[in-house]
Image (cartoon, rainbow, N blue to C red; front, side):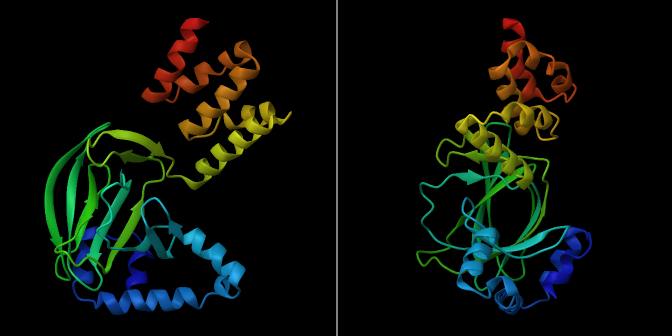
Length: 257
């Protein structure tokens, strides 16, 4: 039943009402059983590859089911988070309890700084809707006995990047591309640059048109290293994006020219 909730776009409030009527432990166990029965888990090698594909090491989540609309994931609840960063989750999410109640701390999301908001207890009768454009959340144990699972239904916004915040200062310290294709292109460009591949400039000329600003900027950097004058011809193209971060990166190069 749980997986049918992301076969089409439904209001989060409607899904919250459905979750309250379901046995979420049984629902998650069913998804885990179905996942383990898939052909990708047939051999040890394919099983390792499949697990890597559904695991997010940054957030400690495992994706049990996905559609073109969203995904369902779980996270093991532990108290060992004192040194780990906080990550934004672009898009909308519903956080729900699987086998025991837990607490989440909410933070108001600004561009480069988080502000501590309030703590909310999540139990079987109280799933929580999270707007990732405004809120970052973090798990808090209810008592000294941590454990159990946190469930999450996600409708990702792939056009927005994942922001990384220092847990103590709450300041933004890094970002990650949410779009998987953007991440692959960034890695590919960096590899071509490291290997000094003779075709790297040709690849960069193609990827400077990529819709993700991080990919376009990396491609532009490679073009600038090869020939600054030719690279500067792409500045008007990049400025058409009206991306503040990209404009700030381009400004010193324009002045130097």
